[in-house]
Image (cartoon, rainbow, N blue to C red; front, side, top):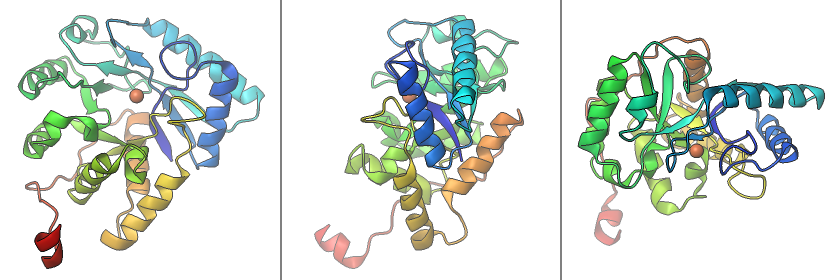
Length: 264
Ligand SMILES: [Fe+2]
């Protein structure tokens, strides 16, 4: 398993608070079957932009400590870049700063204030500069999830989506759980991430999500298990290859049974 979204670097954002916590988080990842993890600290949140060199240094230092502690995991560099007007100032053409694992994939975070039509223009501009945009925890964006056809149109233009493992287990509530299930049924989830922040809550332990994805696969798509496909897709990022997903022709609402329509 490749966890492409995590806050395992300490003292850089609202994620891990210490080396000890980071190592505990990495142990949880390994226990969940994770072989590779991308460190994606917040960048451009409330205007705070850590330098790319800082992220590289912190990831290298943590890898060294993980190796010393015999934690078998590869840490890759990355960022969770908040998308607003300023993003276009520091995401420059012909460089891979703030991208995932040395690729041109960039993980973008929207906010409650993000307006889909403006987001679309900014994403297009980033694509023109050679970046491959990937939306972090797409299930969280109210305005976008109200019109999934828009998200699908973006995907047809090369935008990819990551969902949080905790959304599948219901950790973030039943509304988000329903949304990831809808996205899953429509084949519109390309990557998974723990979005792990700490060891007591919002952790990097994703074993329960694995069980839930096995259950969903058995129930709905016997030949497709998102746990495996998301890992295969993430390998494209690690290998710096462009990934073209199979997309649905249109968004399909969940078909509800007679009793559900009557009483649901
Ligand atoms: Fe995050």
